[in-house]
Amino acid sequence: MTTDDILDALADLQHDLGKYLAMPVTMLPADATDSALREAVRGALLVTRTGANGPRTARSIWEDFLREVGDRCADAPGWDVLGAAVERALAWEPRLDGNAPLDRGAVTEDLRAVGAAIRDVMTNSEVP
Image (cartoon, rainbow, N blue to C red; front, side):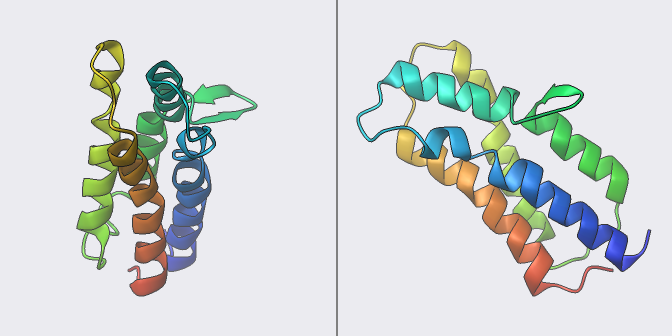
């Protein structure tokens, strides 16, 4: 896998995960109910991207990316931040089945952080 291949994979990740992960939540009106927020987060995590092969979850997009690039980015600046951001975003999934209100600010921040971390790896590091 060449540097260009890795950058292409990161660009795909940015499009499929970085862009679409936060979109359902950020598109909600300011006065959205907790139920609407919960459904938006559910869509963000479980129907992150829909293509010719149907819907894909955020977790499957991330895992496919990791399989594709292997450990080639492990030493890239920002790589650990990206992994942590994805894990924080995915950690909202188990909370979807509960009844406790979700913190809209926290969930929005966590979902948006993924795109920012991907951009950081792409622009501020020399991917091996």
